[in-house]
Amino acid sequence: MAHHDKQRALEVIEFLQMLKAVDDFYGQPLLLLDWQHDIIWDVYGTVNEQGLRQYRYAYLEVPKKNGKTTLIGGLGLYHLVCDPPGGQIYCCAADREQASLAYRAAKGMIEQDPELEKILKITDSQKMITNKLTGTTLKVLSAEAYSKHGINPTVVIFDELHAQPNRDLWDVMTFGAGAARKEPLWWVITTAGDDPDRHSIGWEIHEYARKVRDGEIVDPTWYVRIYGAPEDADIFDEKVWYEANPSLGHTISIESVRQEALAARNSEASERLFRWLRLNQWVSLKRTGWQPLSLWDETDGDWELSDLTGKRCYVGLDLSSTTDLTAACYLFPPQDDFEDWRAIFDAWIPDENMKERVLKDKVPYDRWVTQKYLHATPGNVVDYDFVEARLLAANKQYEIETLGADPWNSRMLSQRLIRGGIEVIEIAQDMKNMSPAMKMIEYLMKRGMLTHEKNPLARWCWGNVNVAVDGNENIKPMKNKSVDRIDLIVAMIIAMATAMLFEDMDMDSVYDERGFITL
Image 1 (cartoon, rainbow, N blue to C red):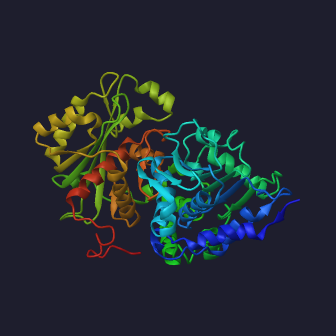
Image 2 (image 1 turned 120 degrees about the vertical axis):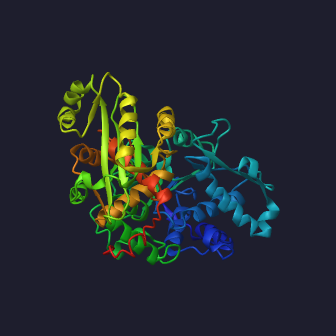
Image 3 (image 1 turned 120 degrees about the horizontal axis):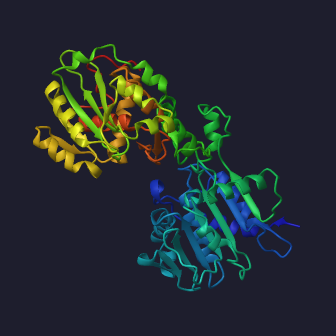
């Protein structure tokens, strides 16, 4: 029968509390919060009949900013200093940068403690720390670079298991590893993942841990603590925030969470990010829709195309693949005769395979050609001569300030347009360019300050946009994950990215002086 060895638990707790904190609390004593104290008390104090640690696996799932990295660094140091001679401690993560976080935390703690500096040797080139008295080592391993050779761990700490690109590193570090050790210990300290297909090793281990916690699986070697909001919780209830974030009020300010919640109310992408990073819900972020069709329909322009003749505009050009749609968006900033932004579109499709695509895609390309929302060019690829001719004609119809195009496959056409008198700049379709432009479009449309022509092809593309979201809330359209075409909207985003380089634009104040913001 398992029992609790108070002394064993206190040894770990007292060691950790002798350390100095890093990051935001650098130089201050490392004070364990109640929830951290309880976990360590359980994991290290629960022993079996032989007096050895009962738990071999300790699974902690907690949202970001709750002190996860500091805890990992501290635990790594405890084992490095206090374990028997010849130990091998590994900090594992998906990539070198993530794997280095725990190492840097441990290093920062050592540098603040002269006693530890005496006995521990830091080898930055190998991301390794060695106990000079016992030969025990702490090493960093990432999924990008590891070798099976010589791995016989005493302790393995997996940081952000959900981010592992495959199960290889997990299998190497757990299958048969540590078999020769008396008390091997595997820590999994992770946030929830954004695994839309539920096929990742992170999801697999999360589900196993959850079942252990809920009593669906009996495994006395696993210790499980999962912090997060249930899927049906009211995500704007502050009580829910405190339950999901055990360090709220300590390492996280309530005010910053309130700000995040405000963003979540105003954007689907922000809401999903809030659910993932702050409430620790496993949500599908990689295939997130951008904005609803209702927003598009609400921003149909009450104006005529003829109103735009002779007006200033920026053009976004998305050439895409030559067999697919090619699209241009003409984006008119506010000027003398109107105070909103206005968007109109051109698009091209190869004539030869259009009928097949009508059947395959179940989309009325032929009707859109008849209605002049789409231009069919002869042959089985988009003929760029037609694109060039239309853009040069548009430059006579409107005053094109600058045209933005992805450098990937546009350079030859760009040169021809430059010779025709159009200024062309390169706008790569990456987070850096796309995210601010998408957020500006979203911001202006929600305030009725960006309108567009009634265009069924553009509307269809708008409804198809899926976005990628990173941990900093940057977004970009995902062409490869969008089931159907999104080219006209990509052209619109490129047009806005181009405009933002030349127009005086600030999300917080761009329309304050005009009196249009009604928040």
